[in-house]
Amino acid sequence: MPVVEPTDLVERELFAAGSTLVIGVDEVGRGAIAGPVAVGMSVMSATCGAHPAGVRDSKLLSEKKRVELAPLLREWSVASAVGLASPQEIDELGIVHCLGLAAKRALGSLHVAGIPVAASTILLDGNSDWLNPILASPLDVRTRVKADRDCVSVAAASVIAKVHRDELMVAAHETRPDFGWAGNKGYGSTQHMEAVRALGPSDFHRRTWLVSYA
Image 1 (cartoon, rainbow, N blue to C red):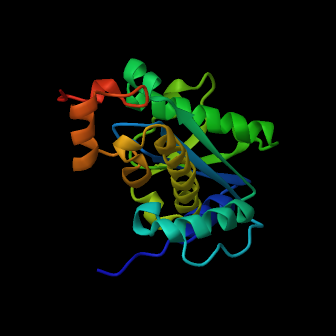
Image 2 (cartoon, rainbow, N blue to C red):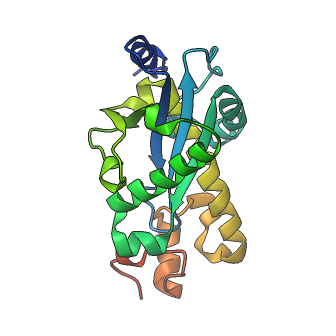
C-alpha cells in the first residue's frame, strides 16, 4: 500500500474561507504506560512556503528521519509548541482530560509567542474535540480523521511532539535505565513490563494503567 504524502490542501481551503492562521494539532504518547502525554502544535499561514520534503505522520517515519525533520518543521512553521501532562495528572484526571490540559499549555506557549490563538483555526486529528471542553472560551476547532496523515500542519505537529517527547524519555532513561525507556519510549514492550513486574512502578509510570506487576 503506497504511503500517503500530506499536503496543504485542507489548510489552503481554510485560508480561502477566511482563516488567517491554521494551528495543526496532534498528540503523542497517549497509549504509553510511562512518561507524559504530549500535544504538538504547528502554526501555518497562507504565506508559508513549501514544507520540508519527506514530512509524514510521525508513526510513518524512522526515528532518524524524525530527528532530521523536527528542526526544519519548526523553522517552516510560523510558530510551534509542545504541551505536556504528567503521569501523575493522567492518573488523577484521566487521559482525555490530560490531552486537553497539554493542548491548553501548548496554546499558552503560542500566545506568549504572539500568536493570536483566539482568531486562529485549530485543525485537530481525529473525530473528537477533546480541546474545547477544557477551555474557558471556545476556539474554532475542526476535527478531521487521519489529519496527521493528510494535512501537513498536523503531520508537522506530530513530528515536533514525537521528537520532544522522545528526548524526555531518553533523559529519563539515564536515571532509570532498567525500564529501557531510551528504546521503548514508555510504551509497554515485553522488556518494559517485565521490569515493572520485577521492580515495581516508578514515579514516571502511569500507575492506574498498570494492571499487573509483582
